[in-house]
Length: 111
Length: 113
Image 1: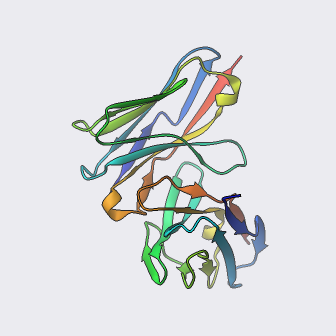
Image 2: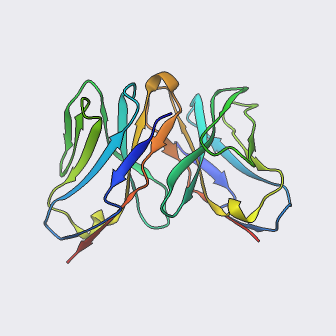
């Protein structure tokens, strides 16, 4: 089944404790991206990747890192999480000029 | 960069009525406009999209119109049903910047019986 898989689905952590949210797609898509969703603000892009080893900042990249060492994986790294990064995170992928496919989301709480 | 504005933020209609959600975009180079539906606790899912070489597209009860000159596009849902209740997002992209899809802030649609 074609899908974008994110893990974990829920995560509660404390300020400053490094964490990684994994994202994997099995559709051989070139493009992958991370969004955060906050009430009233919609979906805002954090980082995106056009292919292996090619990444670029989205609209809200501060406090996040990504890597694209393999085509199927695009992890999101929070080196030192803070409470303002409490949010719902979505990974998405697509082929060029095709609709985005979203993962099921990761709800992160930073206390 | 691109900026997408979406209105209204909430919309309540009676079952069987029509619903219209409107979006405007700022970048005249944008040429791809998808609409996503997000049910409570779930991921956004594409329901319809339109490209800039087309003015209107329809899929059963859902239609999207695009006015390139005015830089706005709209989602029309006819004969609404309770299962249409969800948050709807519009988005815009310049396919020359492939992954840069900019979303509106969403419309919460409630269909009442």
